[in-house]
Image 1 (cartoon, helix red, strand yellow):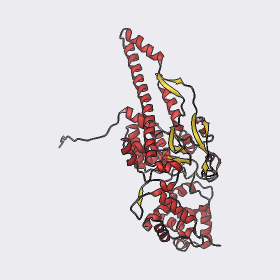
Image 2 (cartoon, helix red, strand yellow):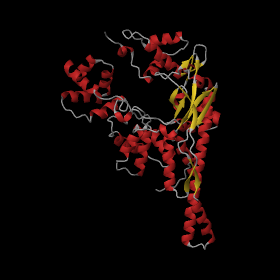
Image 3 (tube, rainbow, N blue to C red):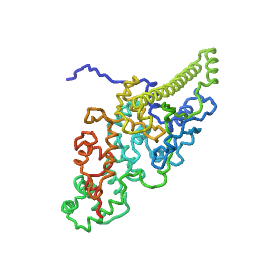
Length: 466
């Protein structure tokens, strides 16, 4: 029996102009110029207007080899210099460019190619995928207004995981090593044993923790056989993009902002890599006027409709660029205001915990807007070059109930471990005690979490034997 029923469904849809703005907002300065050129090529109604090239005048602080500000007679010396933004462009292939080149060689359709770009945009400097595939599917819908499945993302990811260097696109260490060992040009019992260790989560956990006796028991192998397998695994790279190979070194980053201390006042400048303004083509505007005066034939109407559609598209792009600049400046001003004391000298102990929602409320923006602002962008300060997302952190309460940035806690943990006796390294419980003496009340599991985030192994793995 056939029955009819009505259902209601609410679905959020974004206007093309909003999607355009969000895409531009997420782009770092290093990619913005290419995006503008791409739009000019697509739309004949959009033209670039030459403007007098201007360099950015910002203060430059001399630093020592450790990145600390050099001082003379207890007085910080500042010199002004001219910066050509183009000089910060990468002289060698960046990780992103290297992966995008390989993506272009795959026989993907348009949707698969765009999914690949989303995936590559979420691979960090070490070569790991930092976002879940279901979240990438959601991001794709937001950016393109097209629904895709998680399986589609997984399928494209499998292709990217075949890219060079081996291990790129992995979601964890085990997957990274597994991707590499399947491409190793060796055979033998030692290779087979190494593959067994990596493929099995339980065996791999024993191997990571150097629990060799139970591992040998589970594998039914001798000490010598396990040592050979270990030698194979140690040849693999746990961080595919952090090795010493040439094309990943000496890459210059284009800062999206410059921040400097001007005699006690913090000032900032948005980087301009595109020294031209955009305008509507006078040629086509004149053509439109002439067409409007002529008889309205079918061809005439189609030409008028085409030009008007391109005019609307060009205006939307120009407005989105302007809105991008306005948002970037407003958000950066809010970040500086929120952590003004920190930006004066870069003292991490002065960095207040700052969440995306804090800046969203200060600027009347959505949290997603602030997240896109912070994505893939850098700021050159007078005390170093940093990713903008580094300034966002969660809050921890100290013994007096004051809010402390988690970055401050991590910095303190790092300093404690640097000073420890490497023959008797501190356990997490001991670090808890030392932090308590500093006024930070943390649980042991919290210390362990921050230690893991700093890529610092447990005490027994830090121990050195003389």
